[in-house]
Structures are given as structure tokens and as C-alpha cells.
Length: 442
Ligand SMILES: Cc1cc2nc3c(=O)[nH]c(=O)nc-3n(C[C@H](O)[C@H](O)[C@H](O)COP(=O)(O)OP(=O)(O)OC[C@H]3O[C@@H](n4cnc5c(N)ncnc54)[C@H](O)[C@@H]3O)c2cc1C
Image (tube, rainbow, N blue to C red; front, side):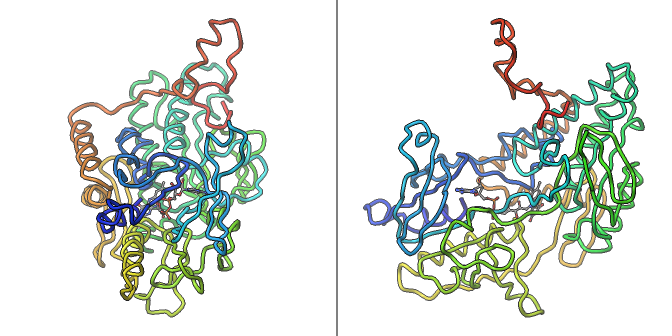
């Protein structure tokens, strides 16, 4: 989206005269600002405010809602499927291009853990974040109404695997929300819930540095969250999370945020990839050794020219993705005009993470902040980064309103299956899993 925005602005004249055409292929008609997903899960932001409608912002581009299945760069064609190609039975569409920008990001890196494919929940999309929120509140409802202590115990046990940004922020925000929501339940107290963070290495939140990582462990433990370092999830079959330290937790909630891997579509191209499957790129964001192919973000292995150690690559995060995308857009225009290309150079500015309402950690240009100041910095930073003035205004308005009223604690799980009630009324059986059950686990 950022590259297309840049191109649309810089090629304004050419687009007007039919001298250029920008086509954006995307599975969803919106861009997701992932750093806001934990706040969406906690109910601090509405789901529609963490996404940007592509058709509105890319009004001079041709937006195709579909998926690139493969790219034959030698022939300069991409094979794309859309919802319509499925219905028409005409097979995938081939799109010819002059310049290719490949930025499909990454997908969850899963491991062959028994039960994970059946019961695990990811945390990369708006649907997953909102589904998880509904699921957690629904588990509290189940715990509040059951007379079976085993069901209650499993409902109130929440296991998160992976101590990076996504895992720590999602757990911390949801725990904070559930702790608040518990005051509206006559028989569910915060201390009845078990929140467990499982991390394979000896530290969490490597993004904010070692010291703040240690602070975060202490802070989460102070909130009674069970942080288990150097521990792995070995199985979650039969809805029992079995850990490598021998602990066993019956649970209906296993959230998997243990890393990412490059999007599999990269393997369906004739472009060079590194050992980890990312596209080999130059610091000018061209694909190495290939003309007219460009890449950025999590899918691209871009040399970090600011790093002291040679061979260092840019980390897969939003900080690089957004900045690379802009340089990439500029470089395409420069290449078209025969001008020299710019090198992408961005020294790590720092990192911010939210640990719930009014709690956070931040590391900015060597300065470390914790608690409310860090949380304010986190909000300020992401407000400045979320694309478009329209979105910024909506997010700010929502935060302001939320500060004046009580937190939202409702689960709208039934939105996920809007036909269920009608199907029952019509005498049939609801065709889908019960509401609020992201993976059929309740
Ligand atoms: C919960 C969470 C919190 C995070 N918090 C932070 C943070 O605080 N700070 C930070 O720096 N980073 C954070 N990150 C990481 C950051 O969001 C990513 O590094 C960043 O989004 C990568 O950008 P990208 O453009 O490469 O990929 P994406 O943002 O994933 O975009 C890729 C797009 O390509 C589309 N696509 C995929 N396959 C195809 C296909 N075949 N055809 C067409 N389109 C396709 C996808 O649908 C998607 O829209 C967080 C990530 C998560 C999940």
C-alpha cells in the first residue's frame, strides 16, 4: 500500500495521461496495521479502525481483490486468482507487467506439534484478533455458568506460545481486558484465571532490548502471569497443553505466535531466495541479479547498511517495512526516469510495546521507559505511523472516548455466524461451529 501510494503520487501526470498504470493485487480490500491488533483484541480500538480501505486511498490504482498464485518473471506475468475466477470456473487470470513489486509479508511459522493444527489460534489478522477477544470473553461466560470444575478450569486457562511482539502484547492486552471484565462476573475473579506465556529461549520481547525484556518478565509475573522461559509446547492434543518442563494444562485456548516465515507464494516465483526463503534483495530494494523486480518488508532479505556487523539484514518488522516501501516507490520512479537509485538506510530508532491499558515498555534512542510514560509513547508513536489522516483522527477520537467511558466487555461472537439463528428457526442445524470459537475448540 505504501509503495502504491508513493507511485500514485509521483506518477500523477503519467497516470492521468494513460502513460502508467498501477495494479495492486491483494486478498483483502484493506491494509491491516498489525501493531494495533492487540488493542483491537482488548477492545480499545474498533476492528475497522485498524485497517485502511485500499480502494479509497489508492483511488488512482487498479485494485484487484485476489491472490497472486505464482509469478513468471522471465515472461513478466503473474497468475492471479480472484473470487470471480473460482465461480466462473475459468481458471486463474494472467496479468502482464513491466515492473513487479512483491511484498506478500510473512505467515505464522508453525511446528508439527500434535493438536496444534486443530486447536491453535493465530494472531496476525483482524479476524483472528477479534475472534480471540470473543473467544476469551466466551470462556469467562462458560466458566461462570458451568458446574463442572474441570470445564471451568480449562475455560479459564489461556496459553500463549511465543514471546515476541505479537505474543506478549496480545497476552498482556487480553489479560488486562479479562481482569477488568471479571468485575462484572459474580463468580469469576482475576485470580481464578491462569495466563501462561511459553517461550523457547531465555528472554522475551528481544525487540526492546535485554533489560526491558527482563523488566517485562517481572511485570507480567507481578500480574500473576505464568511466564515460562526455555520451555516449549510439546502437544495440545485433546485440549491439554503439555509443556517441555512436564507441566500439563487442560485448556481451550492455545494462541500460537512463535515466529513467522516468508509467505509461501515466494516459492512459486522464478526469483532468487535466501536460505530462509526470503527474496534476496539489494539495499536499493531491487531483487538481486534481476531487472524490473522489487521487494520490501518481511518477504525481502534487505542488507542493513547501518549495521556495524557486515552481512546483517533488516529485521522483519513494520518499522523497516513501511520505510522500505517508500524508498522502493521512489526508486521505481527514479529507474523509470533514468536517475540513480537511492540506498535504503534506516538506523533502528527503538521499540515500543503495550502491556495493557496504561502499561508498556519503550526503548527510544538509548532511553528506556516503562509503565504509563512508555504506554503513552507507544500510542503516540503508532498514532504517528498509522496511515492516512482519516485513520489517525478516528483512532484518536476512539481513544479519547474510551478514556471517558467504561471499557467494552461484550463478546459479539455470533457476528461470525450470522445465519445460525435463522437456520435454527428454519428447522435445520446451524452449519458452523458455535460462536466465538475460532477453531471449534469450545
Ligand atoms: C500482532 C502483531 C504486532 C506487531 N507489532 C509490531 C510493532 O509494534 N512494531 C513493528 O515494527 N512491527 C510489528 N509487527 C510486525 C509487522 O506488522 C510486520 O513486520 C509488517 O506488517 C510487515 O509488513 P509487510 O508489508 O512485509 O507484510 P504485511 O503487513 O503482512 O502485508 C503483506 C500483504 O500481502 C498480502 N498477500 C499475501 N499473500 C499474497 C498473495 N499471494 N497475493 C497478493 N497479496 C498477498 C497480505 O494479505 C498482506 O495484506 C507486528 C506483527 C503482529 C502480527
